[in-house]
Amino acid sequence: MSLRHEWADARATLGASGIRVVEAGMDVEGPVALDRGLGFFVKEGATNILRHSSATRCRLSRALTPDGRCLTVELTDNGRTPVPPVGGGSGWIGVQERFAAQGGRVMAEQTADGFRLALEVPWRGV
Image (cartoon, rainbow, N blue to C red; front, side):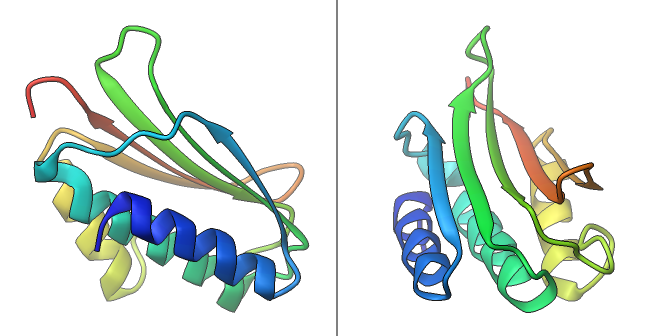
């Protein structure tokens, strides 16, 4: 499992399900210490969209913060997720614990247009 692999898989799976996928940001591969966890985050996020939302659009984005110290990965969609995934389900608890131990944070919120799942994790010195 890697960020690059799970990103491509999410794009293909969501697209095959009829969800229009837009990608933003740079093609960045995480440091080895983070790569598996980043891949797991994207996989869990895409699964959440497929199982719990009625989304027709999804935006996958990844970028370094302006100061280059953190990587942000986001999955946003125009669906309605009945229960925010953060704090619920063993997969999300594992994601939260993994990135909290590395100084990161996972955020989930209902937005005016749908749902946003984001991860911010320190990038330098990992």
